[in-house]
Length: 91
Image 1 (tube, rainbow, N blue to C red):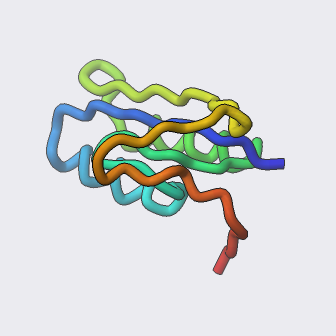
Image 2: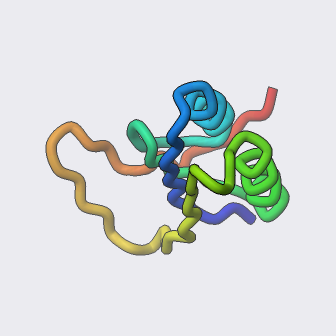
Image 3: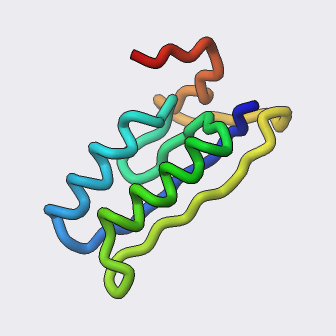
């Protein structure tokens, strides 16, 4: 079963920032810049944690993974869109 997570990161080096951003694009269903909404299974959550650790410098960078309650009503402002929780396809 998948759960909704908010993955946030602050990476100080542009090269590492690019690597982290590209890595998380494979998991995100919504978000912006350094905040991604991701529907993850327990195995995928482990992959995300491991992948972030491999691409970050723990002395200079930081990342947070927050589990969100999908039953909670979301409120968007401006051009923000609600997290997508439709069907998933793995290619």
